[in-house]
Length: 248
Ligand SMILES: Nc1ncnc2c1ncn2[C@@H]1O[C@H](COP(=O)(O)OP(=O)(O)OP(=O)(O)O)[C@@H](O)[C@H]1O
Image (cartoon, rainbow, N blue to C red; front, side):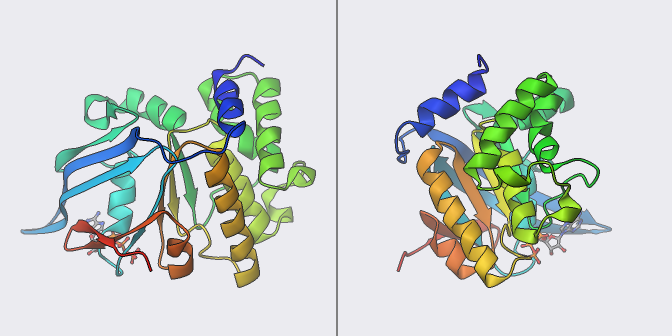
């Protein structure tokens, strides 16, 4: 297959990925102020962040500290009041809405607690969707999606719809969908949040495996300290900024 995404994936899978010097995600002076009537609520306040290719960072913080706000800005779903987000060298500020949509499709994978799979499509079709949106032919997109379903360990469930899958299987499909475009950055919001302990542990093991075989940067927002401890760095969001937590 000539798809460059596949070529990149194959080259990144052929060797164990290590954290490189290449900065994949960079934020400067990131500030988000919500206006509530006469009141301004400053949620992010001059936040700085750098994540390198192949690196996984966890973001922890108390409820209301701004984790969702941060993820929305990193994913280009919201615009900052001040400051900038750069992904793979590109400033999101420079992109208009249509270009931002294309950039998201090409460079960012999203995994949420409630996976947002489309109920009427099979696991394979769900995983192939970002490539269809990108304009790939169905056959080509599904061939690539099948590779990802193999990678996340549920190839035999590809013909099933989300309603026929377990919570852990659905989350694996969501992870396959996030990775199918060979993104620069994967954003995860409580990826094990609605799973029982055993299933959560298997998703965690899968994430470890993926981290070894992909070169993208991961940002994982979670309240789960064992999930956080599995990442390369743990950052705490407090007072609108991130501080490094010492690794134990
Ligand atoms: N659209 C909005 N308008 C006004 N205030 C908002 C808006 N979105 C979020 N906030 C406020 O910003 C703060 C941060 O919210 P955010 O959802 O980012 O926190 P969080 O860390 O993700 O919380 P949780 O862990 O509970 O999900 C909260 O005080 C919230 O009430």
